[in-house]
Structures are given as structure tokens and as C-alpha cells.
Amino acid sequence: MMESLLHSSPSWTNFFIFFGLATALLLAVLGFVTYGILAERKVMGFMQGRMGPNQVGGSWGLLQTVADVLKLLIKEDTIPKLADRPLYIIAPVIAFTPAFMVLATIPFTDRFQFADIGVGLLYYIAISGITTVGVVAAGWASNNKYSLLGGMRAAAQMISYEVPLVMSVIGGVLLAGSLNLNEIVAAQGETFWFILLQPVGFLIFVIASVAELNRTPFDLPEAESELVAGYHVEYSGFRWAFFMLAEYVYLFAMASLTTVLFLGGWLPPFEFLGFIPGAVWFALKFSVVVFVLIWIRVTFPRLRADQLMEFGWKVLLPVALGNIFFSAIMKELFFK
Image (cartoon, rainbow, N blue to C red; front, side, top):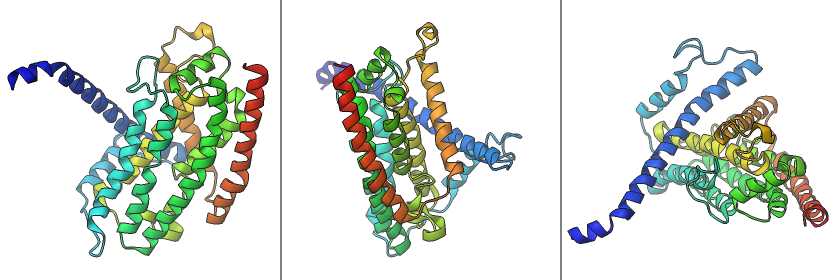
């Protein structure tokens, strides 16, 4: 027994190293979620002429979100009497887990990445789609018609906008010649950032990503004026917090993916600025993307359900197809 443990020690060492790194990343992401929510509320307050949080944690309200998290943790955890109990309990986990799993393939710098997979982009798209199952399961298991309507809306919206989202990145994949996220960043270093070579693809990607995140103006699954609170109306306490956590972790992941695919990742805009660490460039670009997503939320009103579906299928999809056709021609002419 002892001999087998000795022989297996290197693998256990690797396990604990990666487990520690994963835990550190999770804590970093949770820190982003905590203060990302605070930043969003402050920016929304500024743009709408309000004060925003300013009571807990000084005049800037720096501990307001921490207090909100503590409040959620001590709230009573209620389960409807006629709910499908096992599915009701597991649904928030199904919704959250993929949000954290997709972070494994995102290269934050040329040296900081958990898994350098040859099809990293495909992995991200495939795993992120599992969240839809958790959302639909929550709506069904709650035994509430409003929840079920919210879950069905979420399924229709996420599936519909997943199509143009995937098609919007095909142009960049054609130019880079790879689904590996590191190679996509490297290709932008050799030519230009793909936001310049693929402006239409970038625009479609941002719009579709907002819809995938269920954020305004595409927050139909949570339309409180129509569905009380959507698919998670019967959830409370930490189970409800799991759904909100999944949304903001996806905000972190989607902003990171946007930075990698269209903004050159950790690469500086000009070579003479290469002395600044790549992590700093990534953080700056990432922060700009997050700010733009918050700006969109503050600016636009919610769409009707029929408008949302028509826009996805009748506008984004044809434009995305046209962008693929144009990208193929551009690669053939200029990037042989």
C-alpha cells in the first residue's frame, strides 16, 4: 500500500497544484463578481443620475455587495411543496458549473492558462450551452407556470442566439487557421486585431453574447414585469444566488473571450509598448469590454419576445452568413 502511494506521489502533487490554482482562480472570479456587481451599480447610477450604493463601506459603498452576499447566505432556503425536489436542487448547480468550466481554456496571458486545448473555442461554445439545461430544469422543477415560461424563453433565446454567436467567430477562425485560442491571439499579433479585420463579426458577437448572458435588452427569461422573476421565481437564498453567480461568471468569461478573439488578448496595441506586462493589457481590454456591456444594459430598453426572435433569425443570422462569405474571400485574396 505504502509503495503504491510513493509511486503515485507525482500525480498527487500535480493534483494539489492544479486544485490550488483552480481554487485561486475561483476566488479571483468571485472577487470580480462581488465588485463587478458594485461597479455595475455605480456606473448605472452615474449614467441615470442616481447615487448608487453609498451606505455600506464608506461613501463608495465598497462593502455593499459583500453585505448582499451575506444576506443571501442567511436567507431561508424554501422549496415549493409540489416541486420536483431532486431536479429543483440540482438545477442551480447545472447552471453554474459550466460557467466556471469554460474558464479553463481562456489564455489570460501567454503563460497563464489552465488547459491549452487545440479546439479551445469549440470547447467553450459546447460547455457553455449546458447552462441552458439548468435554466430549463429550474423552470420545470419549480412547478410554477411563470417559471416554466421563463425557462422556455431562455431555451428559445439561448439556442437562437447561439447560432449567430458561433457564426460570428468563424471569420476569425478562418483568418487564424485554428480553433486554438492561443493561435488566434498569435495570428492577431502577425496582422491586425480581428476587431479591425472582422468589425461585422465583432458586432454580431457582442450582440449575441449579451443575449446569451440574458442581460438587458435581451433579459426576456427574467422579465419581472411579465414573469414576476422568470425561471428562478421560486428560488431563494443561496440557490437563487447560484443563478446570479452564473450570470456574472459568464460576464467574466465572455468579456475574456471577446478580448482574446477580437482585441488581441494580452498583446500590446503597438510593439514599442511591449515592455508593459501582458496581464496589464489583458486587464485593460477586459475592463473596457465589461464597461461596454454595462453601458448597453443602461442604454437600451427591453425588447418584446417576438422582436428578439425576429432579430436573431432574420437579421443576425443572414448578416453572419454574409460575413463568413466575405471572410472566405478576404482570406483567399490577402491571407494565403
